[in-house]
Image 1 (tube, one colour):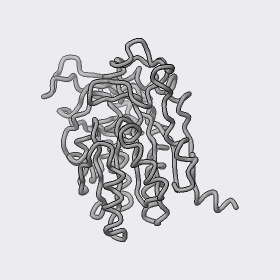
Image 2 (cartoon, rainbow over the protein chains, first blue to last red):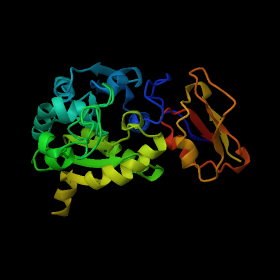
Image 3 (cartoon, rainbow over the protein chains, first blue to last red):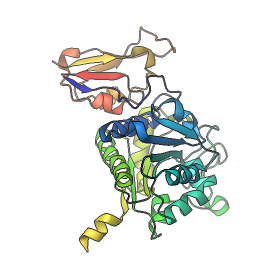
Image 4 (cartoon, chains in turn cyan, red):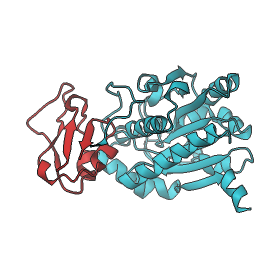
Length: 251
Length: 68
């Protein structure tokens, strides 16, 4: 009996990600959810700019490449053009979603667009070589903050889930991580719920995945996963930040 | 006994599967190099494998198939 194998929605190619990069885990979770919900034929993914720019090579569903940060805007157009027959998800990093694409993110959340957003937060710009991102931690050493992020000059990191949860629009916001087996399983549950919400027509669902970037953090893959526990999670606490359906049921 | 199959040429030798394994089944093959120049993972104690699939759950490159 096969206990675990590569999901069918994940293409049979080698990914370009660095050794130990958790992008691969999140790709697989999205593909597993697509398989389990049986929606591969009608799913359209929107790839971002950043490390995951070539995500269109790795999923077997249809994919569109959006301009930097504009994935939620492209997703809005795709979803509205044929809302009954398309399941639309975007897959974005923090440099894409939380920096140049912040306006698109906030407004699609405010409009409660019926799309699913997978947001990878690794607190750094990976693809361009490790510059400071809007989500870099205070004091974090990056290429553009060699003495550590100085909050007087560079401001404070943005907590996307908390910020969006102040809006009345979004349906579902959750922050998860993938640094150990238990957290990977929880992350999959959250991603599945985000897709199910869209199928049920509930609206904007965003899952923020706190990820590692061993190369640009300058660590081994193992130390990077520990660093998530030690440094990232105290600043970016895991949990559900908004779940409107659950709130309604409680009332 | 559970059976592990590796797509060795796609392994990047990150070692996340090795840490995830509760039974110390896996190790990097220090005397082998795959197509991409990495030391790939291999099962050094395959008889201890319980088929929990923790290794495959943590593998970013999805190279492990677990059968039981």
